[in-house]
Image (tube, rainbow, N blue to C red; front, side):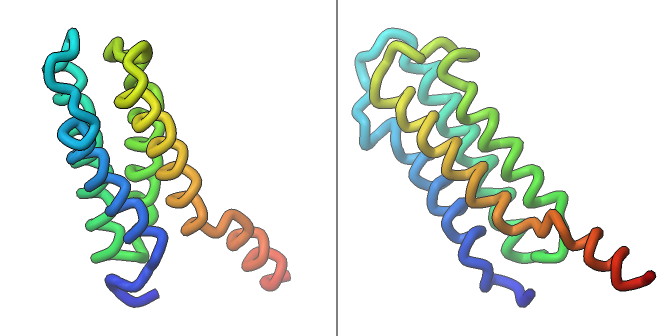
Length: 122
């Protein structure tokens, strides 16, 4: 796979960028616990975006894909952990983007590659 060409990584990069900007788009200003919500979404969105950039730059490194997946899981869990599950906009953004990131990033991995190589060697 060539650098900067994998569409899954571009999708997760855009998802991370959206998560970073979503506190502005969703107008979280004036909400109770606003600082925690904004900090969590910006931090997790940045981590998703950075790991996506690493995966785009080095497509052979599966650790970047797993990092993106892990950050997607953290993004999904953030509304409960940070305490904004009752705030509709940010919570649903975290849940939907978290699931999207996990599903899309996992499509990059080839779970049966080892089995195929192992079978061919026999």
